[in-house]
Every structure is written in structure tokens, then in C-alpha cells.
Length: 198
Image (cartoon, rainbow, N blue to C red; front, side):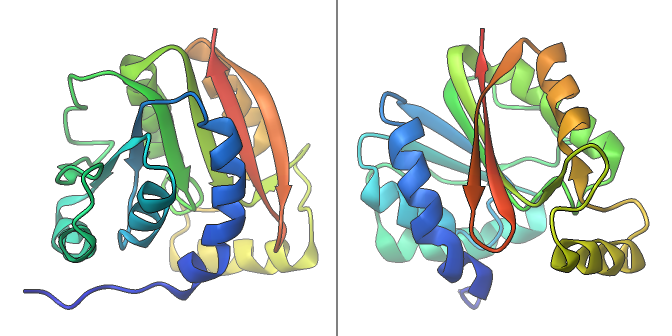
């Protein structure tokens, strides 16, 4: 069995994200998490939101680590993770009334961000919600000095990555029939953006 992966930021932000998801996903049944990473968020949210089926997904190399978290907790509402590289893999045929993704769009290249939104457009049901957590710029400006430094670090690591402008993401959302429903301020200069399918 592979070592169980662990990300400290997940431990730090899981409760504040849960507080928002408990409100936003109160009437949601099936959530697809795009970019489940370690799997920590998935088991925490699924345990505290038992009315949801929480479907993990990520690229092939992360799936074994996610399975260690899912197998250890053995929750009834966390099916096996799906392989999903937004640029290469076919999106699931089933429909979801919720999509969640945390700290993903700033580590993807922009073509992957576009592909992610296009895929969400295929699987999100009418009135379904997209909740996106992370740092975002507004009108091209950083919301904090720490976010500006983080963006420099991201671009040094991968020139295609970087903190995304809210306006560009909102344009992608509108192209797939979503309207902004909420913009939640979060600790550490992060936000949760919530769009709903019209």
C-alpha cells in the first residue's frame, strides 16, 4: 500500500471551506471534485456532509494516494476515485449537481483551465453549482502582497501557471451557462466562487 499523502494546507483550510459547502451544497446530491489531490478534503467533507455522494477525481499518478484516504475512512458516500486529466481524459458520463475544486486553476496552464470549464459544462445538471476555492485577482490586481509573492513563485515553478483573474474565470463560466451566485471571502486571502447553472 502506498504511503498516505498529506498536505498541511488541507488541514488548515478544511473547516472554513466546510462551513461554506454546508450552506452551498445543502440541497446537492452528487459532487464531483476536480483535482482531489491527497484526498484529505474529500474524506473530511464526505464525513460531515453525509447527504452527498463525493466523487473524487485526479490524474492517474495521484489516485493511489487518494485511495489510501478513502480506504482508511471507508465512508459509504465516497466511491472509488476517477482518473481525470482535464486535457486528456474523457469526463464521466454521469451527471452531477455539484462540482468542487480547490487550489487547482492556478497550478494549471490556461488551456487546462478552459478544458476544465468545458468539461464541467458537460456534466453539471440544471441548477447545479460550481464551487471554486483559491486565490483570485480582481481587475488584474492582487488582493494582497502575499498573493503577489505566491504568483511569482508559481510562475518560477511553471510559467503557464499563476493566480487567475476572476473576470476571466467568470467569462468561462458564462460560456457554459453558469451565473455567479456568491463570492465568499475566506482566510489567508482566498475566496470561494460559486456559480450556478441557469
